[in-house]
Amino acid sequence: MHKKINQFSIIEIVFWSLSLIFLVMIIPAWLFNWPLFFTFPVILVFTYFFLFRIDKVFDFIFFITPFSIQLSEFFPQVSFDIFLPTEPLILALLLVFAYKMITGSGLPRAFVQHPISIALYIYLFWLIFTSITSSMPLVSLKYVLMKIWYIGVFYFYLLNYLHKYKTFITTIRLYVFSFALVIMYSLIRLSGYGFNDFQAAHFVMEPFYRDHTIYGAVLALFIPVLLSLIFRKEQKALHKIGGIYFLLLFLVALIFSYTRAAWISLLAVAALFLLIYFKVSWKWLLSGALLLVIVSTQLWWTIYFRMESNKQDSSSDFSEHVESITNIATDASNLERINRWKAAWRLAAERPGVGWGPGTYQFQYASVQFSYDKTIISTNFGDGGNAHSEYLGHLAETGWPGMFIFIGLIASVLISGIKALTIVDAQHYALLFGVLLGLSTYFVHAFLNNFLDADKMAVPFWSFLAFIVYAQTFLQKNDTVNKN
Image (cartoon, rainbow, N blue to C red; front, side, top):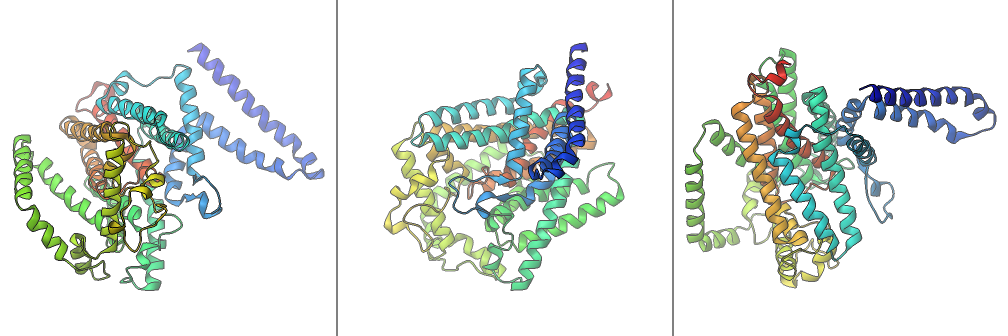
C-alpha cells in the first residue's frame, strides 16, 4: 500500500510541475509566437483525467459516441478510417488498462473466470490465429486490434470501473441523452423532406450515423433498456417522466427510420420477454423450436414460392414497407442482402477451416459474385461493404470454427443473463432484464446486418456484456459484498 501511495505522489508531482511550467512559459510563448504551445493545456487536461479521474473519461466517451464522425467524412482520400474522437480516446484507455494490468491492478477472479470472459478469450484467440493465416494479414491485424481495444476497454476495463464506481445507469443516461440530440437532429431534417419520404430516411442521420440501418439497430438496442428504467424500483418520479419521454422519442425515431431489421428484432425480443418472464421451460422451448424446423422444412417450397411472388418493394407506406420484408423477387435491398449471403457461403466453401481472415470480406467477395445474383445496387469491384450478417461474416472471415465460437459467445451471454435474473437484487432486476433484451435485439439483428466494427454499436454492446457479468457477480440478493 505504501509503495502505491508513493507512486501516486510521484505522478501527482510530475503533473503539477508540468502545469507550473506551462504557466511560467505562457508569456514567452506569446512573445515569440509559438502557437502549438497553446495546445498544451488540452493535452494537460486529458492527462489529468486519464491519471486521476478515469471514470470521467468513460463518461465522456459514452456521451460523445453518438456524435462521433468517421475520418473519411473530412478526408475522403485517406486509405484508413477511424471514428473521431472516440477511437483515439479508446486506444488511450486501452494503454492505461494495460499499464494497470502490468503493475498488478488485476480484475477480481470472479470476473476473470466468468463464462462470458472465457468465451471472449476463445473468441479473441481465434481472431488472432485467423489473422495470421489471413489472405490479407495487414487488414486482419487492424481489424483484430480494433476488436481488442473495444473488448479490452468496454468489457474488461469497464468491469473494473463498475466494480469501483457502480454507475452503469449514469453511462446509459449519458449515451441516451446525446443520442436523443442526434435523433432530434435527424427528425428535424426528415421533416424538411416530409416524414413519408422513404429515401430521405436513409441519410438524414448523417454524418453521425452511416445510414438508417445502424441508426435503427442502436435504437432497438436501447428501447428495452429505456423501458426497464421506467419500471426500475426506487426510481425517482422525475426520472420516470424523463424515461417515458425518451422512450417515446426512440419509438418515433424507430418508426421513421424505416429499418425493417430493427422492427423484426424488437418483435422477436417481445416474444423472448414473454418466454423469460413466464419462465417457460427449456424443454418446451426446444420442442417448439424442433417443431418449427420440421414445419418449415415441410413447407419450405410453399413459403419460398409465396415470397418469390411478393412484388411489394420498400415503400413510404408502413404497411407496404412491412409487406416488402418477404419480397425476394424485386426488392433491391433484400436481393442485395441475399447476394452478400451467397458470396459469404462461397468464400467459406473455399476456406472452411480458417476463413479469409478477419475484416477481409469486403475486399474478397467481388470475385464470388455471380452475374445472376447481382442487383442494381451491386458493385463489380465488391466495394459495397460487409456480409450483411454477423454470423455469415464470421463464417467467411474466420471459418466454421469462428462462427460457432461467436454463436457460443452469444449462448454464454443469454444463459448467464437468464441465470443472473434469478439471483440479482430487486433494485437492479429491471435494468438487467432490459440490458439482456437489448442485447437480444442485436443477436436477432445480426442475422441481417453486422455493426460490431462501428463505435456506435460496439461501445454499448460490449458494455452491456460487462454489466451482465457485474450483476451476476456483485448484485446478488443479500450479497455480503454489497453489505461490506
